[in-house]
Image (cartoon, rainbow, N blue to C red):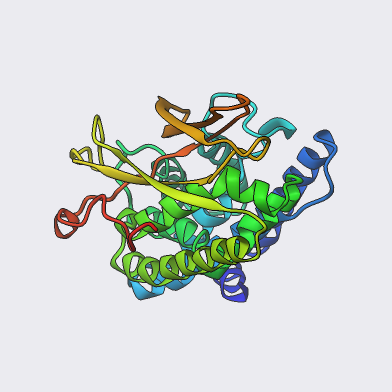
Length: 316
């Protein structure tokens, strides 16, 4: 992280500190409004993403200055107006609105500012061409959610939301495993693909062990089902995908009455992504659980065509 600070200080003295203060203030305002305990989750994620982006940029022979800036700003609009996703405007648009005057006041060239704003918007607008800096940041953001860093963030976020271990796994592990298996095919750089293979394997191995230990000790029992989606699937470049495998992690039985659970799923368009909505309903007492998450987006390079939709490792 010192490397990120040094890279920014060399060309825009004081900017790094101003960005971090803005991120910290934004999260503090949100936690106060939501009556939650103080947190630096957003700031720490932004720092990690910038640090990973710096390393990827060097490996990809890209000047790390713009990737570091885009990484630090990429979630700056998440708590716009002191709320979490308050409106239907993508958070990257709010981030761009924050970045523009700050970067101008820091003396950056207009071309550099425009490159940062374009990079932020291209993170969610697939129709926009992804610059080298944008590709680096997208991969860095996804890599921060993999491996031991991703596992740590998973449980930190669960604790912030007041969820215990079993509740966190029930509500969010389907997303984590689906993203981990898709990660190598979602990356936009060669470095990102290589690192994603390494880090995704760590994610899958950790949660495999955790679920097995929970079952062995008689604490909780989960099963994994694979849902195959085959209709209206597109990669980032607009090319069609034949199929996408999604891993659903669910209790083997109803937590209320121990009867079996029905699994149903549907898709809907969110603000920035195609979402999968998963509903579990007990056949006995009617107890229901619902979770939703964005489907992963594949890069769809020519070399990956035979691999798209396959898991890094088979689901159990």
